[in-house]
Length: 270
Length: 361
Image 1 (cartoon, chains in turn green, brown):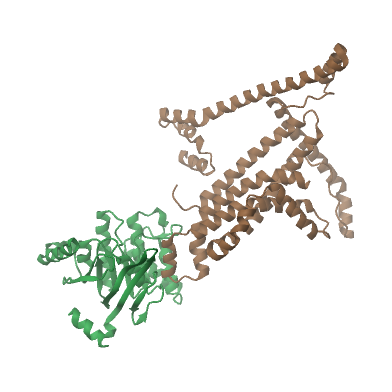
Image 2 (cartoon, helix red, strand yellow; image 1 turned 60 degrees about the vertical axis):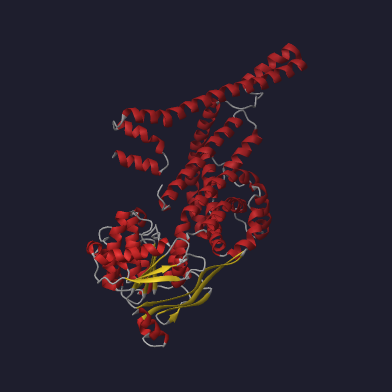
């Protein structure tokens, strides 16, 4: 299925089905000892409404890849095309959920989300914007504390705001950079559920970087396994065929779950 | 009630009274009593020790000078000279000008306040007396007659505070915008860095002279209070560096995550500066402003002294030149007043800083 799609895209067909197209993407950091090639001619296509996760060892360049898609990091060679447009810089059409929540601590949760909404829906009415902000904050379970200052929220709550902020931009692509990496396992589980729930309704094309095998299986349609750097490439791709909406408890009992899990862990260990 | 008082105390920087409040509320007696001893009683004891040391030292210095006078009298006039000199010292005709004792300073301070009262009364009387004339003069388009007598100590304090305030405002409006520009542009920063490094350590006295050279020429045709203008500009220029450097640092070291947020949201330059950069630099800017206020107050005395603009500096200098019996006591009294006002200014800035600082403390 995957290969056929890639072929048809290469022929110029079905190009509308592709949201993100990474073509021979290379990242080189010049060092005094010569060029350090982080990513080498990496090709990847992400379909519309697809959720992919990228796993790999620390330092393999997966975060670099994500920041390049976001437009926050220069592309040394190759092209990234998002919704038929070449990526040349950052923009709200590619929202990022950062590893640290990166909320502005002097603003309330509401104002943090509003900052972006104002940018994207500048032409809407004030009421519309207010509705959008409140809708997404309620979606992530913060209707009661939306006017609290961001610095008074726990790390988990802050990341909820981060999720609301990204979805509220109505982006074409959602980029998640180890969004739950800094959280304890209990909070991480809660937030994964929040993310699954919001994503099921919005179906925004998503690319998530993670270390967590279970997280990948729970959230992604495809798991991209990257080889260890330098000169990292796509090593293997695993399709997760569970139906959506997914539910953590049901997945764990599914016989295929452990097959997928073993596949991923095998890749990471060798 | 108790927590409210504690919060207010902490806010204005008098948190060391906290154990006393807690003790009054009957909370955890043993722990709070220890804290009270540590934070209140021991400081009070140290004040007493300081007073005793000062008193003993002052007496000693007084005696050294007195003995010297008597010795000189003995050498020139024999026993009769000694008796005469002793009588003159007794009557205050011959002054023994040394470090005054605490009691002398206290009485000098009270005298200064009494003097202020007397002058205030005089001023009021003068105003009433010239009220009618002033009305007439106003009607004729002439300048009103104002009181031109000697300013009291309290008037001098007010003038000094006003000078520092003007200097501070000048520093604020110079240092914060310039610091922001420097923080935002690395090119600008590296091109004027030499200027900052050279001007930062320049002494207040030289600043005063520099400002004097420029302002004097610019105000040749101006018949207002030029010495005040010179002194507040010099105070501002001396004191602004801490704010300038801190603002530059704060603006240039904004968390990279916040910059990324601004990029993803496509914020305009103005939005980026006012919504992200400035708020995140606020804590550092206010730390700078706090230093600026204390530096401004510190250099004020020297600058007023040089500029002959009225104020505490001039007061201290005049008393020193005066050399009357209680002059030294007045100078020490002024020193304490200067110190205490400086301390209060710092507390005020501290409270403002707490208000705008967003990080948890």
